[in-house]
Image 1 (cartoon, rainbow, N blue to C red):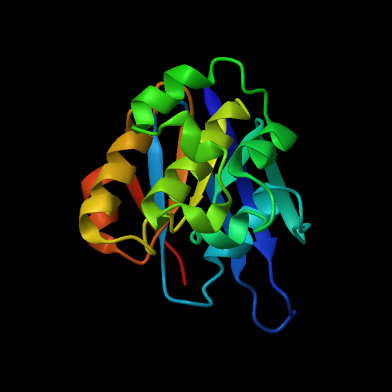
Image 2: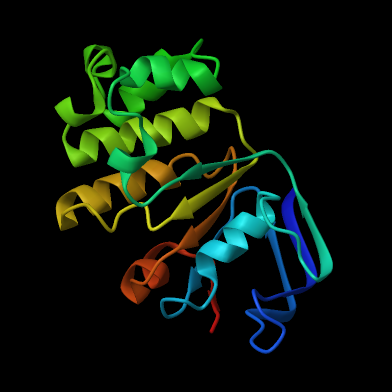
Length: 189
């Protein structure tokens, strides 16, 4: 099933320097595509366009329900509320036990404040939150860059186990990671 279609997208913050001109992309359930390019090339802007936070100058974007996993899990959770309360704010937590076991997370960790979890634990909680939102499209903005190499691999393997549920669009600067996990690499900039 197609979860994302971008057709002939044109966008730029200024007329003189467009980030996208006649850009097209499609993504299906079970597929992961990596968006790679230098800083400032428009990788995160593409996600903002897909989410509808920005409007393209031309072209069309059709996306099924999406959720996002951010680069820095500490900035994606409010520091004074428990992780579980923040997950409950946006998602139905029934059936969460299945995901907790898969992610190697103890439910007791979710009753803590974000700063009480390690970076790897909090990133897995961020993935849990994103999956509990029941998306068809998962947008991954450098989801492993703030983690050490062992935890990076663990987090990516965890994500890939859920490819039968969603299509994934991954922003990364790490070409080795893109080569390892992506069905297709889209170079921008």
